[in-house]
Image (cartoon, rainbow, N blue to C red):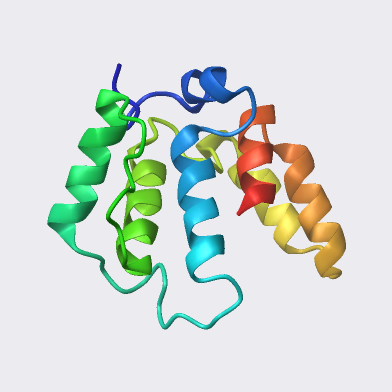
Length: 130
């Protein structure tokens, strides 16, 4: 079963909370990058061939799809590709007006809570993980 391009609800069935791709890429980044500053982590492009290789490994259900990855930009690229491949964005189109209202909330802590309350359960877990 393809992981990339599948609805987020299907990906969450496997783990019960976070899609495997999200959990593993975030854990990898936390373990290898942590609090260190990485220039343009999600802006700088990773190795496209390696990103596609990891995507294929996830889609085949391999046990360690990130094995051999040593570049944070590539692992970040896998996460970006997964999120871009979702049939509906994490912050869905139907929430547009509500998101604009949340953006107007002056206190950052209240904005974060308000945003989390708008999202469907699987999206909320991913949002707070990121």
